[in-house]
Amino acid sequence: MRKPTTLFVLLIALLVSFDTYGLPKLSSYPTASATIFLDFDGHNVYSPLWQGGTPFTCASAPMTDAQITEVFNRVAEDYRPFNMNITTDSLVFLAAPLKKRIRVVITPTSAWYPGVGGISYVGSFTWGDDTPCFVFCDRLGPNNAKYVAECCSHESGHSVGLSHQSRYDGSCNLTATYNDGAGTGQVAWAPIMGNSYNRNMSGWNNGPTPYGCTATQDNLSIITTQNGFTYRPDDFSDAISGSPTQINLSPVPVTGIITTSTDLDAFKIPVAVNSNIHLDISPFSIAANNNGADLDVKVSLYDATKTLINTYDPTDKMNVTIDTILNAGNYYIIVQGAGNSNATDYGSLGSYTITGVQGTLPIRQVLLAGKGEKNKHSLTWNIQADEPVQSVTVESSLTGSNFSTLAKVDGTSSGYSYAPLQRGDIYYRLKVTSVLNQSMYSNTIVLKDAVKADFKVSTLVHSQLSITANSNYQYRLNDINGNTLAAGNGRQGFNQLNMDNRPAGIYILQLVNNNQQQTERIIKQ
Image (tube, rainbow, N blue to C red; front, side):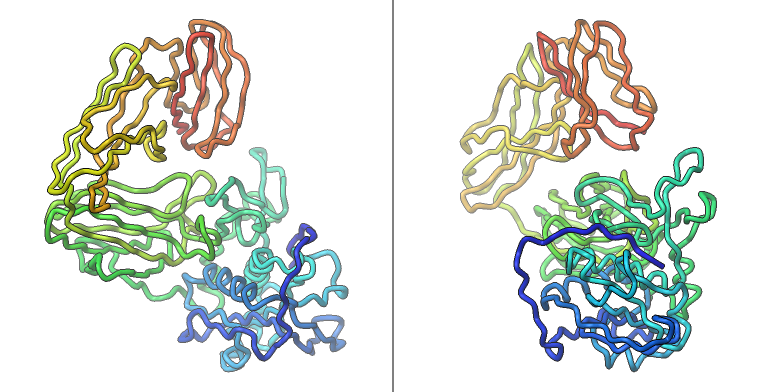
């Protein structure tokens, strides 16, 4: 089956390693018998199914060791949930059972099969005759590690029984044979068996095929029931009420794998004394900003009575950061995969790492309060610390999740007042730093407009966003990442903005007239 290509020209020189004997020899899960061999060093093809049975030779891939390692890491993460070994070592491949292996030949020898990025036979993984599949790296960038990796997973996906995945409109009309997904940034998603070249988060999918909008294909069920292997064994207890694994914040890290959408990894965290806790739960990635991650992480924090304290599931990134203060006692976290505005939790699978810091702080408590009066917001705070406070950073947010610095004041200050330019709800918190350079965050508060608003807005919407204005105005609708989705003019009185074609999630609405600017956080259900 074919995978579409988009041709680009690289305007940089690549350092190419032609030393085939020096290629990185990598294996993702050496104990697994089922094997996908990423073959970069050329191959002599003797197969009755390719080229009409005429033997031919594929040249080695002109890719650097760093590029080969990136391709391996991306493909290995796609197959991480399964009892499957991804390898670049031919000896490991040859030792695998004949009916549980496939060779993926990555080669610039592509003239014999024009117009595609790769080619494979559906189901060939279990044929037992070593019929290979092909990825044509000269047509993918050329030699773009991201594109080559997506094609490797796609073509090997055909070999384990998968067809293409397509997109249809609401009337069941085919709009894309290769579903290219949706979204921007690190949570942009596309199915592996569609066209995932230009989305960061690619994954297995349960969706329609080119054979009809009701002809859905459950990737995970097919992979794990038709090829002689299934999921990896569960690595951690699923419940905090069972036997959660105890982790200490020193030493860390702890690594785990989410193998299915119902897989939960439970951990117990003992806290000996009142402490500032910093936890990072990050999906596997090959670079900054969760580049190449498949797992969109969601974390729930529970206290000693197993009562939920908070759930952390940011909408615009795939990792979770927890900065909080915990009293002495036992706490629990549950790590799982989550969906987002572009994808469900079905294919939010893969590996993650927990890192953290725990320590007794010279700053013991920071309590923030505030009020809106006339056209000002006034903040006051109380700090209890065993060491002098060096600075207080006042942070604000329109969404309650992404904070930025509003002001930095002296450590002896106990308040801050200003006239906000934004209208609508504004969230505030403090970052307090001691002379020992240790920091602690305050509680978060929200203050509403101190001035009578010129606009009334329905902030929770289903299909129509309602705006009542005292005068004519201009509006701009942005997504959570600041991208403009719509802009225009409104009239005095009652107005509506259609949100039917917008996915569920958080949006930012900016309204401006001659008197004021008002910003509202809109939640589309």
